[in-house]
Length: 179
Image (cartoon, rainbow, N blue to C red; front, side):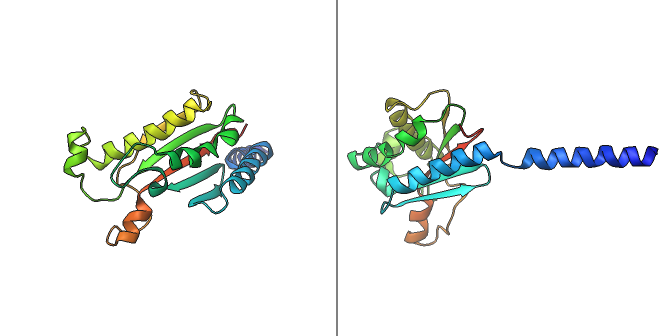
């Protein structure tokens, strides 16, 4: 009897752990709806949208948002980001994390004169500018944050111009309850 009770308790604990790791139907539906809205908004743009377990990640190539070696948004960048606002504005409990990434090319003298000494600094400025724009367009300040990642987590080798271009990117990730 004691062993059976232990087995039942262990089974309940394992089941609860497995269920906790699963994505709720509500969250899944909310992320699926956001995925569909963003796919429709970004047809033809150089934007990649992936639905991961419990997350939605939008990757925007930096050349769309920033001039080479720069961190200030241009008019095309604002148009690209503005397409995201209706979807992001609908969330009340979902965290929005904007991450900036760079390649591994050292910072040049022009950026150094502007106070940017490292790729981490550059990626942080880029992420901050994207967040500032989204805030101005009505995204909730309690849900959004910026992170500069520098040259960490490359998606391609930095040994070719094409690889470096893939590593220069902004990722907007939606995580949380999904509403």
